[in-house]
Length: 275
Image 1 (cartoon, helix red, strand yellow):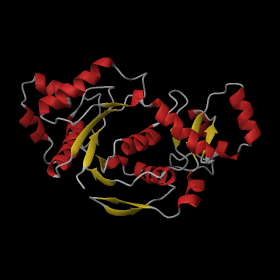
Image 2: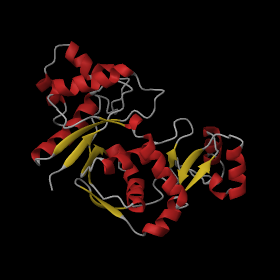
Image 3: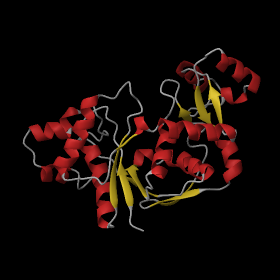
Image 4: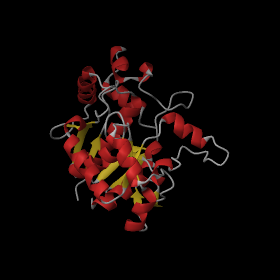
């Protein structure tokens, strides 16, 4: 099978060296296998997206010689697919409305018997159907959370294969009842990425090792929704001289800044070769 990979940045800032490495890993895996390298703009968080960053991302990739195949997928144009999937999960009884605020969640986590991890305590999971219906009816803001334990009862034991770490058994406690649809934008990363990877026939999901934990819930969703299981490669992260992971606010390591300083594409790609 020829690999199909994707690079999926968010147009909320310029690309930095960490993005370059992520794009190059996906690009090279696809090209070395005679497959396709796709570009997806993850622009569902419209409050943070800026029009110029779409163009900047495309220009930087072209300048680096990391050309993608086919049309660019925009998540902002995929709302119906996400809404349909949420509805399917509702019908299966695998998501529930959560009315908790960030303050509520932090208070629960800091309670004497609360968890020290950033895992939702399940407060709203215990609400009755009548109470949730009444609160939704009056327009109370809510997110939608995945009922991980209930889903596990359906799909049973799961695992995924990572080209770097090998076989990893899915652990539902890693993410707990994660948010699949946020209060503000109606969708969240976990659901959107799973739906889009399936839609684009992605065979190899390449991304940073910081997202290894997210793959546990992604495998759950893939199994529940009947989606194919891709291969994974959670690569190392590019860090600065202090060992800190690069972020979009770090303009010193942005591709555009390096271009303005006179760096060539080969020089920029060389900067991430040993990462």
